[in-house]
Image 1 (tube, rainbow, N blue to C red):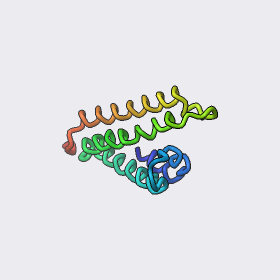
Image 2 (image 1 turned 90 degrees about the vertical axis):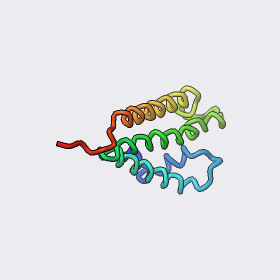
Image 3 (image 1 turned 45 degrees about the vertical axis):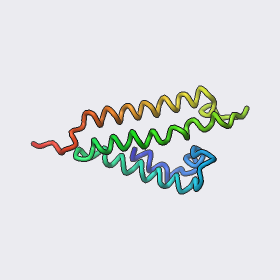
Length: 116
């Protein structure tokens, strides 16, 4: 998640292209989502905050799902493969996998630092 967040700043044009056209302030949303990715990634990395961070990661990635479905509203003959129905399905499946991973991490995390 931290790497993903950092790439929001190193390649903002890519992420602006993922923001649905009906949302305002696309550039600001890219910055905010990048910061959110870094924050939840940092929380997951620390044992004491891992459970909360994993839950926040699952919630955050879930909020990104509409952006991955957005290309289905704008069907063009010259779409990139990732914007065609099969590509959208793959993107959604990958993101649901991330949500599943985060949920599994949250279940395994103790929420407290380990002693010893």
